[in-house]
Length: 173
Image (cartoon, rainbow, N blue to C red; front, side):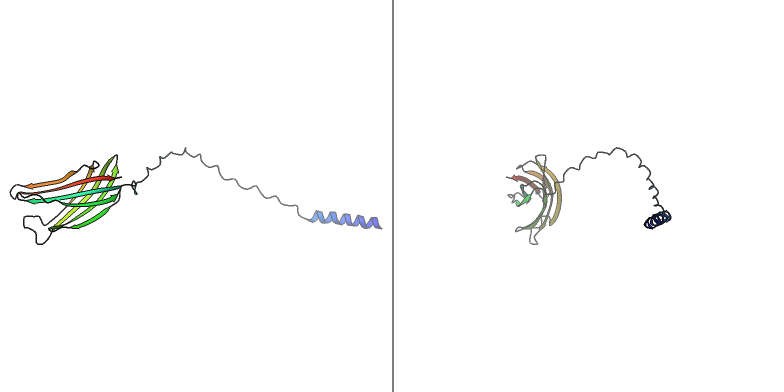
């Protein structure tokens, strides 16, 4: 009897195994189309570094305005501005006969000093009538270290009036 029970269990096990569905194989995953060939990468040179901060030196600007009438000795009005390379400065100065405003930006370029400069002047209310009451000039100059340059010069033979603006830039070490 033991053998018939063993035979029955074997047959029953085989029957159950035959009734279970066979494992289904997953279909192969679709393959993506091959990517088109990429052209060779173009080599782009790096951008030059920007010098917004400038070099770590100060530049002294001496701006002199001479406004002379008649034959008297001219009395220059000088404004000194100390700025870092590539920095912008705004200076306002009051004298006995006028106010002078200087806006400047010095930049070291190839061993020279480029200066972008705007100068404005307004005469005081009690000034002699021969002087121009207000004027404004802008310049962009290339200066040698420590050498003055006349940026503007005017003269009027009828009134014997002369005016000039001199700029000097000196690198401070």
